Length: 244
Image 1 (cartoon, rainbow, N blue to C red):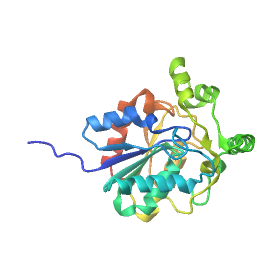
Image 2 (cartoon, rainbow, N blue to C red):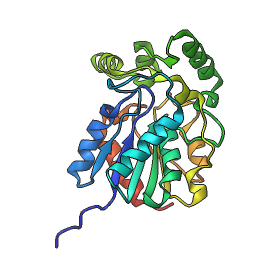
Image 3 (cartoon, rainbow, N blue to C red):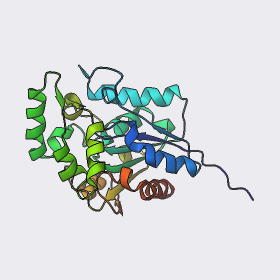
Image 4 (tube, one colour):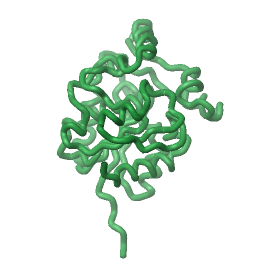
């Protein structure tokens, strides 16, 4: 008897400074297992336009428009890190088409709270960066990759990732969403936490608690989607199939 093909489509949204490329290893794993998968780059985080004037609403609009343009239904929205913001905003607008929202090492936005206010230490650094750059973006350097995003990973990989990061539009970090967590409107959600992640503004368990759920914990740091994509794909499929 032939197994039925999955009907859900994974839509993968990257974190700050990252483009769709950050999800490619995981996307390959998912597609090889039969799941249709789309990886997106947010406006300003690819070499196809300017970052000037971009707001968080532009990122939410982009996720919504790409899903509508592809006529996708039964969507599994996955947000990494800051990507928790655009997937949350998009889920509220596409509730009838969203099967589940999975937060992978991600911020679960609190209504009215921007990313910058999730951590006082990060807030000072981000505000200084926005004020210091002519286009109001937040750059990130190799030191942050080595010390925070990918500690302990091979130096050549850290250097390569550092060279691929683009400055984050500042308003992506200073704007908030005026919506509650997705579980408050009846959308199923899951949270996947990386055991050695030190990049998040708060512990993953705190973010999962905003959804009223417990996190699933996998090995690795904040960028495990690049270093061990098979484990991440397993976790996403497991999260999709679980009901909390």
